[in-house]
Every structure is written in structure tokens, then in C-alpha cells.
Image 1 (cartoon, helix red, strand yellow):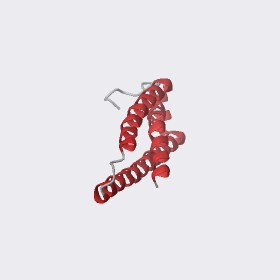
Image 2: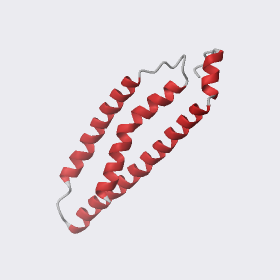
Image 3: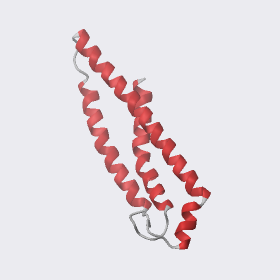
Length: 118
């Protein structure tokens, strides 16, 4: 943890089962986000390939949406991480809360895209 020594209370919080549970939840949410992102990429590539193979117009609306939603998700994630207001030095779980809050908008958007494009 950045080479800084931890006090006894911080070490106890790090060993707390709630910390392990928070880390597990973060991991599963990140994995779910990756799965939905892969599903979305697959669906978009299929749309592009279909347009190229059939001579139809390229799905311009979808292309603009995929750019705009990434910008929006980035801003929402930055705001969520800011609101989490971590105290990293005194609470090791703060990092997990911040990462979870930052992942939430991306997770919501990738899930929504996977469902919409499936």
C-alpha cells in the first residue's frame, strides 16, 4: 500500500471479513462489466459487418452513440469516485468503495448495451 506503514486500526480494517466481501463484490462487478462490454462489441461488429456485406448504410447513429456514452460514463464515474470521498490512509476499504462507485456507471451502461443489442 504505497510503502507507508499502517497503524494497528488500519491493519485490522484490512483483515476485516467485510473488506474481503467488498473486494469480492468489486471483482464480480468488474467481471460482469467485461462480459457486457464483450457482448456489446460483438453486437456492434456484427452490425458493421452486416452493413458492409449487404451494402447497407453504416449504422451512423450507433457509432455516434458509442462515442458519446463513453464520454458520459467517464464523467459519471469521475463524479461517483469524487462523491465516495475516500480516506485511503486511515481506511483501506475506502479504495474498494471508490473503485466500486467508479465502476457503477460503466457497469450500468455495458449491461444496458448488451441487452439492447442482443
